Image (cartoon, rainbow, N blue to C red; front, top):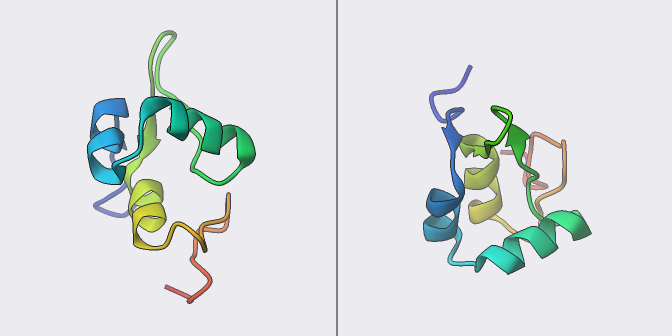
Length: 72
């Protein structure tokens, strides 16, 4: 497991990406942003590694790829 595979919550994602809450959820629906994972009955978050990959290259991010197009 990677050191960056901790679960981050919405406020952290907002700060890291600079996107608004509504933009994040729209992009999830479009398939252009990492989806949330359920962590409890009423809680969800994102894998930090997924957010880091998206921030590094938003255009190349693909769901479930585990890699960007540049092979990192």
